[in-house]
Image 1 (cartoon, one colour):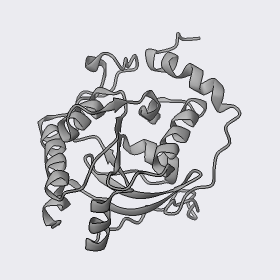
Image 2 (image 1 turned 90 degrees about the vertical axis):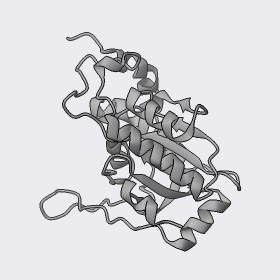
Image 3 (image 1 turned 120 degrees about the horizontal axis):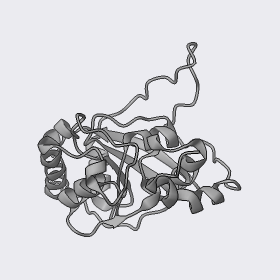
Image 4 (image 1 turned 45 degrees about the horizontal axis):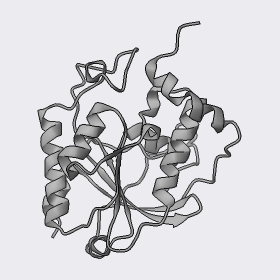
Length: 223
């Protein structure tokens, strides 16, 4: 048997807990009915409305951001180490620009940001810091799920669902900066393209509603 990779060792405790965690029903917005070809249908996205934007300014929502554009010529290595950026797929210059532009747009639109949590991979941490400054909490259980077994994914899915569904104080919004596959595991929505922000309304008890998607090139149209 091959030795455990660093990322697997970091998740072993959470994986042991996953055995008695049950999977909650998919929240509103999730696509859970397979098509005739057994492939899940494409998730139907919605653009943010003016009414939703005004609500965001009052707080109480979750913004799930996929990291900025990455350099696909440098894929994650099999021996990926969260503490060694050279083993991971990095942001490219465009991805850094996207992260800064998203952060600037959120500030321009007067959308209040409170708690910011990021996956421990370098591309997500850098995205969060460029967009939201230094107040970023690194959360190991927002890690990229495509590298994990089904058992290892479970605590990540549960943790993500927790932060999507827990109430957010009025006057602020929670931000999660993570990965496309993670949301696909949670609610059947593979967030794309990179740099996209998803707006969700927490409902408590593991439930949340999908409201809208904001792609990187759509921020300029918001007022």
